[in-house]
Every structure is written in C-alpha cells, then in structure tokens.
Length: 113
Length: 112
Image (cartoon, rainbow over all chains, first blue to last red; front, side, top):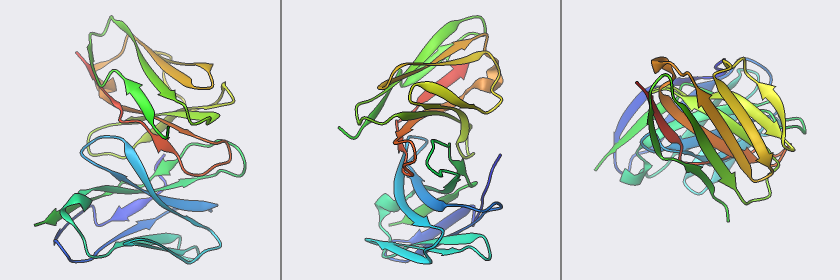
C-alpha cells in the first residue's frame, strides 16, 4: 500500500530556480527518506530525516519534517538540468529489523535549460 | 564496492516461459529486497530477505518465487507470468536495521 502522497505530481522550472516538493504520509514513522530516480532506472538515496528532527541539509537539498501534520518537504536550491528526475519520499518501519520501504506517488521534476 | 547489480537489463518472455532475475551486492548487506514498479508509479515492495531468510512476502502471487542462495545473491524466479506483470523489477540491499537502501538499475520485464 502507498504511504505517501506527493505534490505536485509534476513540476517544471527554469534552471537556477528552486524546486519544492511535498509529501504527506499516514502512519507514524521512525524516519522519512527521499530518493531520486532518473528515467525509470534505479533509485538513489538523497537524504534521511528522523522523526525527532525538524530540518536537515545536504548540499543543495533541504528537507523538513512536520510529524504533527505528517508531512515533509524537499527543497532543491539552484536547480540544474541534471536534477531532472522523479523524486519519491519513502517511509519504513525499521526499528532494528529489515522492513521494506513504502513510497509516495512521486514528483516528476523537469528543469528547463 | 557500493553497487547493486542486476541481470538481465531487459527481458522479454512468453506466458509459458520460465526465467530468472538475478541481483548481486558485495557491500556485506544482510537484507535484500525485491520491488516492482509499473510505469509512472512508485516502486511497490514484493519480498524482503533478512540474513538469507524470507521475512516479508507482500502477498505476491506464487508465479513469482524468490530465492536467496547466499548473503550476496538474490534471485527472482518467474513462471507462467501474465502480461500485467510487465514492469521494472528493482532489487535493493541494506543493513538490517539500517535505513538507507541501495538500489540496482532494475530489470525491464515484458511479458507477451
């Protein structure tokens, strides 16, 4: 079953602009992750934020988490053409074991040169 | 080596064929996963192996049969598939209890 709902489903911006994607989820979580997927290939892990964190940065990425609203956002600053991809939020129940991830529907981001 | 490899990259099979997908990692991860992804949809979990034992089966039809021969290798045996099983099949690995999963490039399966 799908955990998250992402919006927008598609986003097209000019190179150099910032891109913001949102994700909402339904159940309580230990952490929330963001992954990128280029053209139907494998997913690449971008960043993880734990349930006791509110904000996290990694390079041009900024993730926020609001557990009271069960939502997260991913901000990509100073976008580049290479950022064109699909972005998924994902949650897992990992409390020490191996649990699969439940992905949101994803945002398809297009960076116009 | 931080790579998960999957073979073949593409596979076309008839509904009566038997084929296998292969996934390999040499990162020492003891959890491995199969996901199925239809076009323009998110990946959906199929199976989880932890320490070479099947720990999660997300009610996957028996025409999909996973196997984990050792800690580095994960197979997905396919038999009597249906055209609606056509999808991208993704393998991933992680440490049990670890959060980040490492994905392979996937096998694009077409069932005729």
